[in-house]
Image (tube, rainbow, N blue to C red; front, side):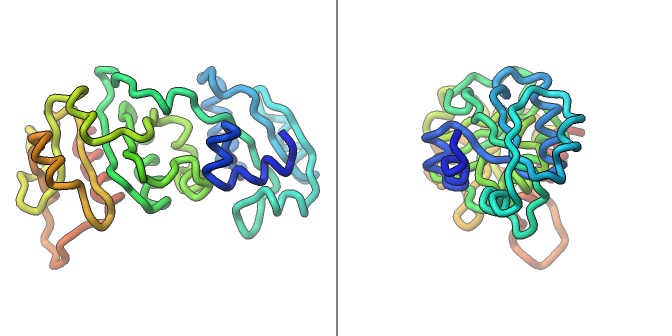
Length: 247
């Protein structure tokens, strides 16, 4: 890929068009290495490095093409103010556009129109930490391959199965029992909370549309608290629920 095309991968339309996204920094490259050793689709990876990283990449143990770039060129590829000097051009997973049946050992977390890259990255980290979770994202959600999401996921993006553009009204064809969060719901720290096929979480400001909850016949649960505010950050709420499902 020409360097000018690689620069375009900061924009979603070009990621979709060209089929690649960017991964930047030592930690993320090491996480990419772990995934590349076991995931077949992670081939045709290109590493763009400055002189400072020529020796560092020699110790990596997965297949990649290497392109040396100048510091100026790296600043154009980078999405950070202080580039480390290493960026990977990674193929998008082919399976993310398929509405796959989830394996029986995976629990599905559905996010409806989540907008904040930091929230999505944090949620991905939690799902990867506990394992056996599949993430379903609705249309009009932030792109999980947005550089900010990739960076905040700290490499979890490589380890969590993700489905894109999953519509709410299609969920009933796959799942029988749904749960969501509501202030008036049952506590999540009850045994019943683990007995659902899909857990619904909504947009940071609007939540899950009420008509969809009615159609899904979803059951309400709440995270018990003793404070004075009436809501939790989306990522915090998802993370607490995922922890509860994992104990």
